[in-house]
Length: 328
Ligand SMILES: [Zn+2]
Image (cartoon, rainbow, N blue to C red; front, side, top):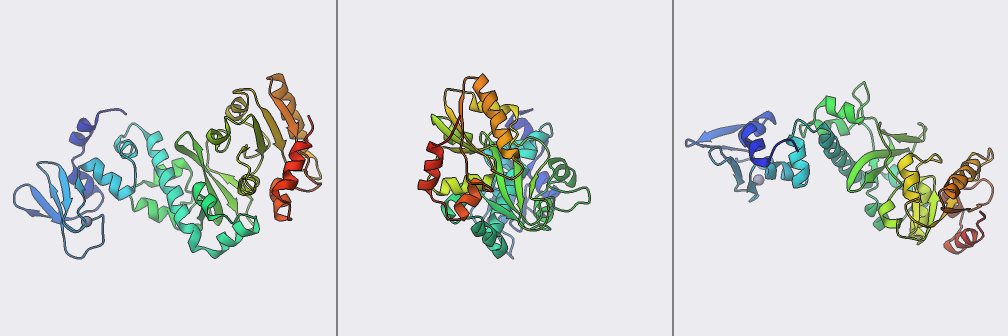
């Protein structure tokens, strides 16, 4: 953070911020303005801004506070994220905030599009609790730009983060969206096409570490899969020691995570006709061995990945037998 909260508020008084966001207030007395409340629907103005105290209060919804509080409420951000939004020095923090908002928006869309729910069920994902836990969403395409620019985000920032294409249209279009976290921050979004478009898409930048690594790092046995739909069916089947590398090629962070402590890694990559999944598993297994980490290769039936194995009727018991039969 480039400056402290008080300095930041002196630089940008609340009334200035509101005006920049198209709020119109009429003067009342010498240091107050009143207008329609941006935080709730209303037709008669009950939102007051006191410019001397630099605070607001709404008699309609009862909300009140300073600039930071207003940003928290209007953009659904934490205190820390709201500060980051205001600091011109931190495009990175702004990018993180905008990814949070995009992910939340996509999550809200999921239930509104039957084709998205149909796709999830076709891929064997039925558990609403898991869908919520993983913050899975749907990008219909064509509505994110409007949603985020209405909240004051600039076209340039949205382009920078990669949420918009050069033409200014939503980058994620008809895709199931998984937010990818690093620690508590979202660092990227993964979009799986539900239509004819190229299957996998990430925003520019890092895909982060192993998926949901914090949940599995203490297990002595870890199952590693290459796709998020492999991950979800295993989680749904009751396997908690699963993580995902989002592809067969691990980045440096992901590799180091696996090597953090003594453990056995069960590599469960696709068994496809061209053998690419198995070759990758073999190579990774050797690299892990060099670093003192035991690796086993779980052999699924020909032509299967964990997702198709469960979708085709495989169950937790059968998968467990494959894990137990895994070879070095
Ligand atoms: Zn209000």
